[in-house]
Length: 317
Image (cartoon, rainbow, N blue to C red):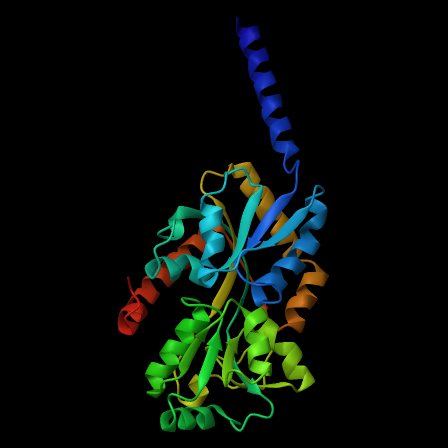
């Protein structure tokens, strides 16, 4: 009897090992909540390219823009927890959006954070031929003509939106707030002169800053960003506004631990490659590794911090 039980346990263990080794046996989809060409899309596509050897059946990036990027989390939260879908999202989608919108998820605990990838802070941009050479120029003009100056940002309840709301409150100004589906929409609007200024992510801004098509008026960061040393912070210019962004991978709750570890390890290995390090350095992004537990804790810290800001702005649902 004992030998039969031992044999059954061995067979069971072998079957489990085979099942774990089989992942990923088919293509895996990485969901991004913004249009192609935006920061989340660009970073995930580079990450996917470096992670590709770990996903021989394919790693597909699927753009699902909407609700300030939260559509991606809603889609992911309802997906089968088998590891064949994960989402690449900003911390705002977990900590800010569910406090404002009626969504299929209510808090960071309705999904499973896997790993934090990069961090950065948005910047405010104007065309190079804009009459506004400094942040003060823009703020003074807004005070004189609050109905005439428009600022674009990548969706309601993104951290770019929160930074804009806080800047308006701190500086006692009002802009026409123009919500977009990401830089794929906002960039052409700014370059085409349809809006006065825009809040964008460093990776979106860098090519245009280097080419001389856009000028940065300020960074929403605590200190000057290493990749943008010439761009002054809002704080340096008298406006204490500095909500930073982190990008992380999440999977549905209930995803097997072995699969979560596989995705975590594949992403972490990609982050440590010279190719990905060069990509982040070239685009003013900071690699900021946190494991799933630390990422979840940070999301909850953000959740509590944003609650008070949302109350002040009247956006808290």
